Picture 1 (cartoon, rainbow, N blue to C red):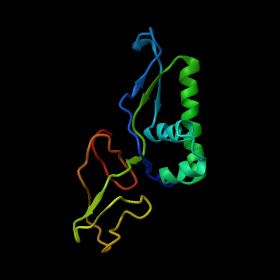
Picture 2: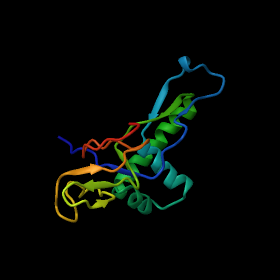
Picture 3: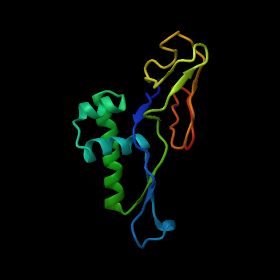
Length: 150
């Protein structure tokens, strides 16, 4: 059985999440779903022009994982452009950068690291809650955190 995917760190949530070919009614279009972390990988590599290693560090994943995410995103985008499909951006396994958690036992607040956020780095406590869940906060299946628009 494969291990659950690691939460990916995302710094950007798009304001527009649906793209379609002009002059084609939506009911006539097939759809490609692009996960939020796939869009983030494309943004970091193709828009910001970062090296894959730097992109992987920013997303909190290994370089091979980043490469797989980026290839999946590019494949979906190419499929949509070449075959005239709509692109819907939604879902994925991610957490918004800057999202903070709070330890109920000692009051410590921090931006969690997906590899180590099961316990408080200050006291080792396990009663950990998100601080101010807001729009665009992702859902991390591995760690059970959930926020606004999943």
